[in-house]
Image (cartoon, rainbow, N blue to C red; front, side):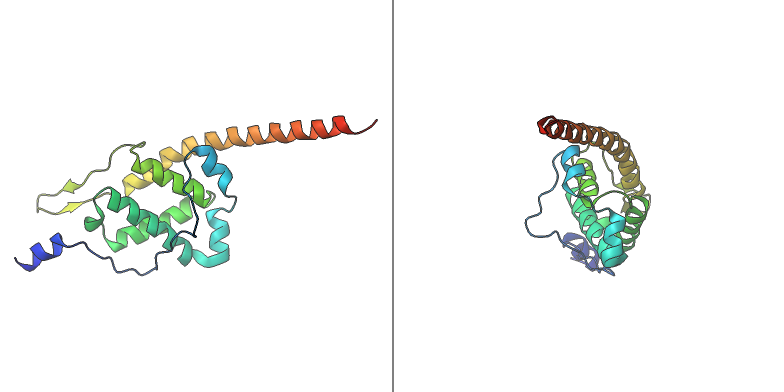
Length: 172
């Protein structure tokens, strides 16, 4: 077995410029848009302000590595691609919460926004286009914002009904 065969047959560990941040103990991934929207109020920007971009990018990198591993393409994705994609996601979707972003990754894994393919080049190399992840997240964003509006309207109606019930109990 030559060195190329050895390197492709063993799982590759990516050297990380930014440490991967794991979930807090007891964290349960969202299972619906409503769950994703109501589970957390802190946006990616809020988290960035508290802990810095480095820790936020580390958490997003962990999700991307999980996604690429699930899709069977982790071995061909470079550290640079993961790093740049994580940073881009943190900046572009800064107004999402972590649970909203996490649910986006869940839906991508489920194939809701299409399939991701390995591209085989003439020289025998394969690659994945990270832009496809951003395109999928853009599609998710449209659905997320519509659902966010619906959830906010529903919560507002519930609050108004609660206030009306309280007011009805007050003596005149």
